[in-house]
Length: 289
Length: 289
Image (cartoon, rainbow over all chains, first blue to last red; front, side, top):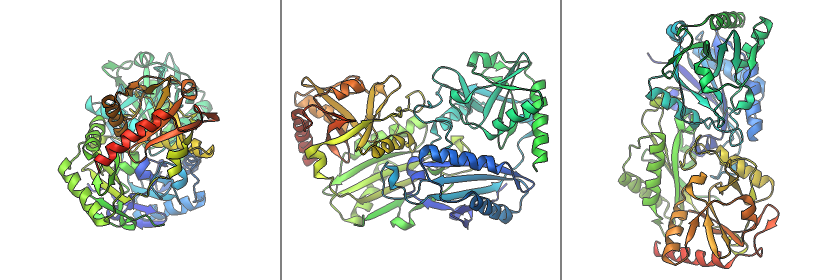
């Protein structure tokens, strides 16, 4: 199957093959860029406001000034969506610090490149949700907040690439990363949660993780449904002893975890609180489609 | 002044404006690439073998297989040098994991992109060497070896970009980065050395730093000139109390440091051992030109 896609570079549309940026772009040279990923449900962009808030937050933390307005992003993304005419698409928004003479000094980056990659998004495999996925705990440590804040969604993703590489080599779906204290942070592109004795836990932002939009949404939804999600640290050991565990991400929603390394989580089946939260989240998604 | 340049992408030559890579390239998306920088002295490539050794080492650590041979790199770099016809050029070699469907899984990267950026390299300002430079100690911590080995010269350079940003905001030449233990590691694109009581010290690789080609060369040259460079940890406090300090990099050679934050180093002038090592290194460079 060929995935249909369209790319907008600074507002100009390109086919996949023609969509190129300069090798002098700092995104290419240093990963000096910020990005967001969201999707559409029935051609409606999902939680764009939250994603743009976070895009600006990431940029601010790196000192990147975004030239486009929020309205401009909306207009240009809609252009891509209309062009493809598909109900469900993946949307990647990338803003780089720009091009210039080569050198680390960020002042050399002149004029952002704004890249939108919009492409067909097939439905995720049903068995992820029905049977749950198998995760590993990565040997590689999550980057420390003091070196490169994991709360910044930037073009520096090798830490996560190396973690998922470990997972794939061990036949797993994805990897869970620990911080230097040995506390659980997140998976490579998802936040993580456990259930223990009816209590739902997710690591706090201070553990060093990206504040997921789905995480934020689910915490809100939990609150409104008398199902509090507690932001508390836990270790890899506590993770393995959990009754249930699951992941959240914008494109995957809620994905149950039923095995970590060689340990079955709880009964080894999708747990009741995971199911309950998935239903609550599904209803929320439907009401935004 | 316009800097003359030529770019080779997978062996095809492009002018600066036309030199582009796909937005689906993993170097652009995730900084999933490795690179090297060297230069020519009188049209002769400086220490290319050492740089290619390190390129392969970086790639191996990330699990990137480099498709080109060493000979192919040499031929293609020479093509660029001939094209420009300048005595002194900067050479940047970038190899990305390639393009493919978007996703962190490195298996999605199909076929490397090999990018060579070759450009005119003006002589460095004489006052760097005559008066020395002003450095700061960065607040941002050097990435931990357990998260992302600083010994890998990769497309993930935001940690260093953020450090030099601090330096520029404080009017300094560059920043010195400490590891999580508070030990000195390196500057953003140079290794660092101090002289204390006639003893020359540079942080060991275990501190978490890139093994500079100039560092390796200078340690060898020191050995042969009865001027041992000791690989030992030191703190920011010891750095400020040093009698002399200097930096080394492939494109800058040996650059004396005469001020760190608000503290003059030693006499505040270029020190005698720095001068002696600079002369030894200059002779080495001349013999390879």
